Image (cartoon, rainbow, N blue to C red; front, side, top):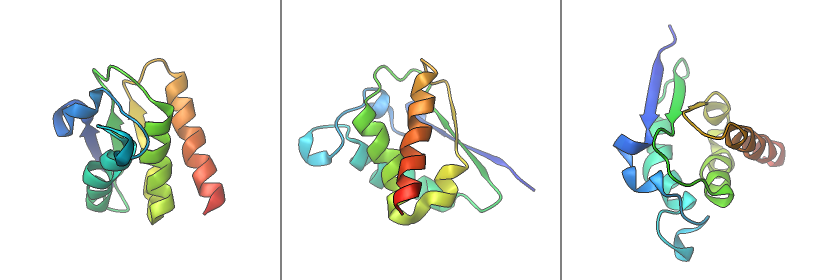
Length: 111
């Protein structure tokens, strides 16, 4: 049976409501740091039957390099099957959701 597991950014890691650069060495709230400290441990807890949902409610800024490093980077780290199944909600404008899908697809093609 499939269950929904929700990662709510504002509850789990509120500092990322203001997304920073791609890499931790470039500044605070980086996509690399988010991936390593929060996203991958959460993905590790998802079973193969879980549908993961990432909730961007109240996120103030979106950074292409942050999003690519967080989600594309998770694919490159071997989490492709789980990242592919993620759903993204409360992300405005909706073209950011399309961008995340593109980052994931590009990473999948390269792995």
